[in-house]
Length: 529
Image (cartoon, rainbow, N blue to C red; front, side, top):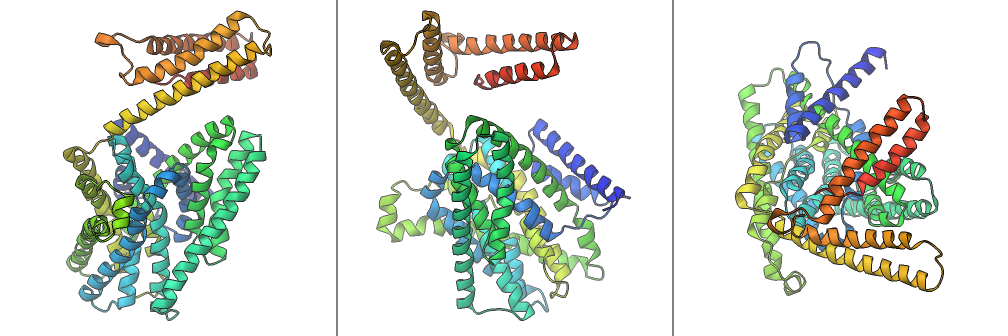
């Protein structure tokens, strides 16, 4: 790689981060703004052509993004929603593949049925990054949000397996339907086994590692190791990575506090950088894709693309309603296990959360060069990805607000449960303190005991105060919120003093960093009002 190429990549990454930062500051959809910026940038004179390398996307970008999402997910909530997640990540992907394949085969001349199914597999899996980000920001309830996350974790494995089978049928290495089913079961089963093996070994290692930096550096390598190990066994690297992330995320509480603090920051930064680059790369693909269509009638190919975009959106809506309610009608066991019917508003929201992403484009670019109507399939994929990001991405927040879908009740219940848990923990801590004092284990001043008691009681008090919004009667500031506000002011003053002392050469930079870290940790414990 020469200097100019490296400089171009650095500038691209910098531009992506700037656009993402603007989106965060203005409370806009970062994926959508990045894609639009990439579209505009692709036609700026002098901007080099950035072709999306499918291997880079599937090996470099996809594993850490999947791992981070799995790490931040709830294994218990995913287990509770496994039927809904399975119907979307497997059933909906195969349904979409079939519907788009049949429509494309009937509509596009000289497109073999197997090639049409390959297109269906390419555009079948939604990328829930944008939908989940919007849903979290607008307070989407926990169950539909969990279903969206679970779908995005597993649907790529289904789609990529279907894609390989369809491409194999076109190039002459195809298998029958029964063999294709066996290939899918093998890929999923071996992927799960490899993921569990790596996760278990990593869990044992992390329990023995005491250095938070070493632990988190090792965790950065895990998604790549899991993905490559599974792919080398011709299994699903996607599933292996997800299993590792879910397992370790579920057991993150068994690691040290330093590991958890650094892990959260590391993966937030990694997600921000990778997602920003990925979405701006999507937009930058317009020019090379259009150039590959020279000689094709523009009106006709736009018609193909727009019709298939509508089919992709409609297929999800058509699937959601029967897959949500029909199993409950047919099965007493499901009604007994899930007594509450999913609210229709949640079903509508999930039906509209079908934005496609970079995996679809990466799969399209992975088509062999001599694949039937390859350039047209690339263009159709691009239109579906951009169309869903623009149409559904822009209207998704409006839909959530219009339907009045909110997690306000869940937030109140969470605050109530947290207050009860804090009270129970504080009571147990105070009882243990009394026990140690009574046994003579502690030989300390009464002032230390008083400070410890006050701290435990203040934590419990703050948790109960949150149920009232952090204010007392008639808007009066509560003691806990007053304590946090004043302590933050004091911390700011302490920082100013130690920085001045460093500038005056009265303390060394190493002393400054140590003192700043102590203040940072303390401020991190002050929950925001």
